[in-house]
Image (tube, rainbow over all chains, first blue to last red):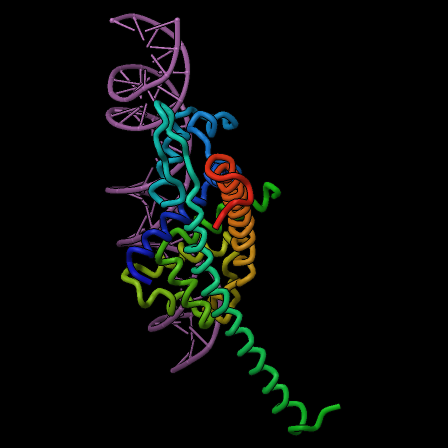
Amino acid sequence: MGAAAEDRLSRVFAALADPTRRDMVSRLTVADATVGELAAPYDVSVQAVSKHLKVLEDAGLVSRSRDAQRRPVHLEAEVFDLMTKWIERYRRQAEERFSRLDALLAEMDNDDDTPRGDRP
Amino acid sequence: MGAAAEDRLSRVFAALADPTRRDMVSRLTVADATVGELAAPYDVSVQAVSKHLKVLEDAGLVSRSRDAQRRPVHLEAEVFDLMTKWIERYRRQAEERFSRLDALLAEMDNDDDTPRGDRP
DNA sequence: GACGTGTTCAACCAAGTGGTTGACAACGCG
DNA sequence: CGCGTTGTCAACCACTTGGTTGAACACGTC
């Protein structure tokens, strides 16, 4: 994996490490929203939410357009692929390793307990 | 999703936001390792690596056993499921939304441009 | 029991994060 | 134009984070 992708992945994971930001992402899967709309449910200032959005934007999770003085926020669903790829790669690797281990254990079992090909 | 799971998810994402920790996880998919072995490739103190491992352990990504003065580190692959679940849930939601949008756009297209059922 | 190896604990430091408030920019509208 | 609404920028604060070094703990070995 390239250094750029590594960096991106770090920003994405860091962005999603915050429950408030995860909740915003969750809500953005339903519909685009303005900063004010996004801020409404939380007990923090609009400025704080604006900062959160900057983090999400820098991670490429979200994009913003213009509509007069409003800045509609839109979820960029493609980043999910980046994460899924990373996770699945290692999950698969780990699973392979466990099956190798299983095979090894089975073989040791054969060697230790019973003569080859001599099982119920 | 319960508060506990939310919390867990935060710790998992935060743990994986660090490239060094992601690399350790990556290496642990190949084989268990001691703290010293894990530390070797990096240009930081063993203590720093020990701290990283504590973060991974608190996130439930890793467990440690005892072998004399050594503390072998083992990857707990199940957490990948937690992440995958979260990601896939919202990915699916986002995709559904986009298909709804596509349907809407197609319908508008019909209404505006061409009489219904009158296409090449 | 003393020594070497592997690991953690404690104190500290610089940099980053999430929050605040206050000022200001960019609009639509009367 | 002046005013309310929407959002960002800047400075600041408390807390966390990733790193350091030095001491201590936990073993196997001599």
